[in-house]
Length: 92
Length: 83
Image (cartoon, rainbow over all chains, first blue to last red):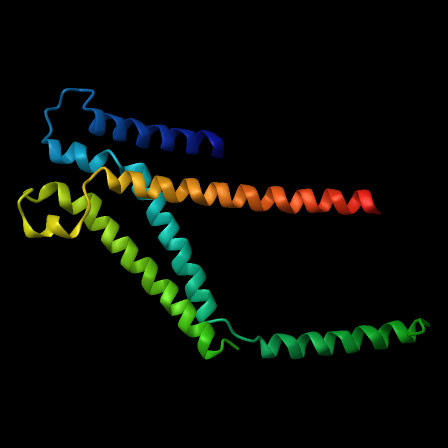
């Protein structure tokens, strides 16, 4: 089973469950509160995804840091590369 | 390093999104199970607005991003013509 088929299966399962509850297709005689809750679920998922994205961006902004060690490592590598190129006769 | 302003902005974004998430969760998930004459219902708009308001927000977001992309592409094309 490919990844696409897995995703399609999962999405269609969720969609059918949502439609069953929110449109009461099987005449389950659920209390109306359940239908009222289930009906805006797609939008609710969208809103929670947006909140999660916003929180992630905010958290990364708040904890943005300099990579001092990585900068030093990069400088060392640049020096090595320059020395190596000079040894091979490249003028800089 | 993140300055104090960065930290303030980032943390306020986090707090805002958490507040929005809890408010919307209570609105959509908890409220249908509470009697309609409860005090909690006074803190929320009628139910249909829980769909209309986010829908409007999505629409505005789409329009803004579409206009932004259109303007950027239009400017790029004009610059190429000048060159």
